[in-house]
Image (tube, rainbow, N blue to C red; front, side, top):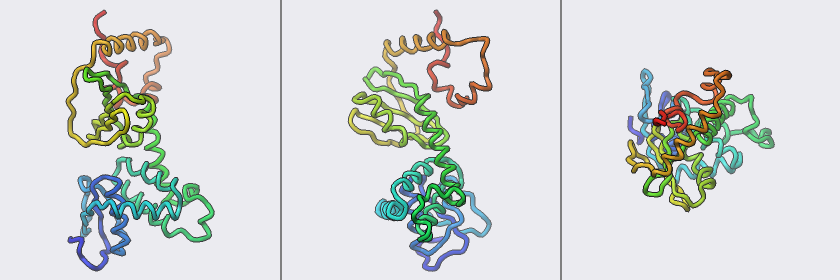
Length: 265
């Protein structure tokens, strides 16, 4: 169905490119067309419903900024920050949850404006968004704990991660502050996205694969030392694999230095 159609559709899905700007562009289009889409979903994840019309949404940064300003004006910056965090989550309903939250935020009764919108826990639109925000926060914390860098021969620090949410944009500021003027790259294998820091500022680069030079001899020595330290702290009598998997999900193990095979000693 063409997006140029003049009249609103009763059963429609908006398909966006997976970016925050694309999602906000979809929100803007819903208001422009006076439609209330049932689904707002990534284009590559769309599963058609029977007799449903699908409209591809063109990402428009100006429109996305207008939605951002509208949310911040109506509900404050914290509400938009929650939208940013929620949008990083995986799931077929992520886009629809963000859309429902924005729609409620822009139409709140005047009597509710004195209460911060994120405190309306009984409202389904708010509760669903906060569920995504919590998931993104948990995944960001796991990345801050379990990112393992290697020092490459070209002077760059490099790490691979595989989070359950697209949280590299959320953690880049943390690592930029920690590493200060040291250039580094964090590559998200699951979402094919790299956060690149040059010692002054960082940016995001999309890529299906990344080729890196080998680690320095000193870095390999330090990795072996870290493995020995890890082994020395282990208490066999208190080994609890279930508790270990709870705090350190198995999906993260392949990128953890301390769980790599040991060299012959």
